[in-house]
Length: 310
Image (cartoon, rainbow, N blue to C red):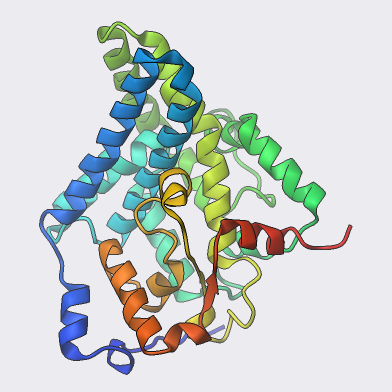
């Protein structure tokens, strides 16, 4: 099939509006990466200092591990820094590798997703095509995430065997097989840092545990919200993805760094992530969002995605 149709910014924004939205920055992307790691380290310190807050720390850290993946995604679009060498080094070593991914492997796969969004050639179609599913199926997926089964399949199994495709293992997950050694090396450094800080157990409880439980869950929620159950998405450029409105707690525990504005990202894929909220407000003021897929929250999306009769 041909590549999906592209819309021109001039159809929606004045030159002044677009210039403000699309402006690159030498510091904003780097500041987001620093913020992400600062939140992870603060939440880990909180869990070490006040152990009964460990469950909260696990959720915060797991969400910021997703944040690292989101910032890797930003780097795949050259959005972390205007200098491509800086962009790629930060996106790979500080964002992708710690959570078991590879920027070099992810970028061509992800750009193919944009080129063929929701069409047969889309490598991410396997993430949205099965939905809606039954409530029982959704419950099983969530249990697999929270019990570490998804983590084992996507992060541990690649160390021992060649991965076979199935409903939970898109090509995007298989790129982890090509980043196993850097992942182990960086995690060895994280373990060494925890040991030197006198809290070696914290690496397991406050890094590996979130990576094995909350991170897969919020990654699944993100994937479902972005493309599942979006009508006419294969032909309408305004409906190739979904934007999900979020409350403050959802930004903290599910959707960091404006990842919920996925419709705007697909329409204007080179916009930096920090410009997506303003783009959404401008589109809403112009009445464009009425033609887009916009959900009032993740609960609504999950209800729709698990609404198939048994």
